[in-house]
Image (cartoon, rainbow, N blue to C red):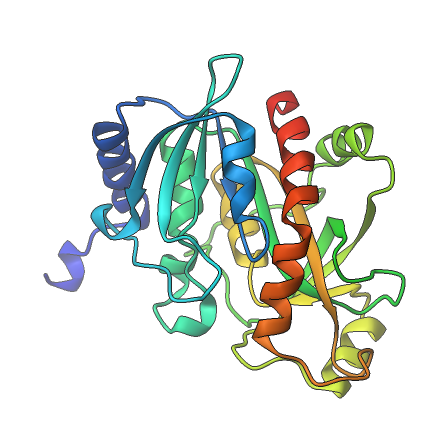
Length: 271
């Protein structure tokens, strides 16, 4: 295919949405969730699983490249009859597939009809008050990838990117929820202690390798965004021990019941 014939991100998302509707039997999804490390088991708590589609069967998606991610697109019917699309096939920036691939899930969710996007991740705590095993609301982000999903002269406003009203709604479910600024690094290596100190100096409370680019794309698509980080470990230099992915997975497993209960109570209340 020549450059002039290259399919646009929007057209690829529309084709992916068409295939999801065909394979799931659900013509429209109202809410979408990308479930990161530690969050995957929450899907079945939200409602009745209608359909599970291997990601590679849908245009633009790939099998999950990270242990702890499900690799499926799941349609959930909630008690009120609405449908939620669970994206368990996140593409990370560090996989080298390009920013379009990173945000394809979000754009596809919008193309299925979803107006609310819930983005979750596992992350390191910069603020010592954020201890492993606890979810934190994302109030804002700092994008250190030196990239953007926005192409061309499209000047998308990011004021209140992470919806204040949805954060308020989340706190009615769990008043103990803290909130903080998420800093996206490129990965796949963990941040150095100096980088973690830098993240704190510039206003960050949480560090990770996803979410910010997806949130920007969701805003461009006109979606309302709610973000959560599960603190899986204290960040480098905050933690007294070396970091490992096994530590992240273990923290996620231990937190799964709490996270599932949180989303089961919250998601049906989302607009």
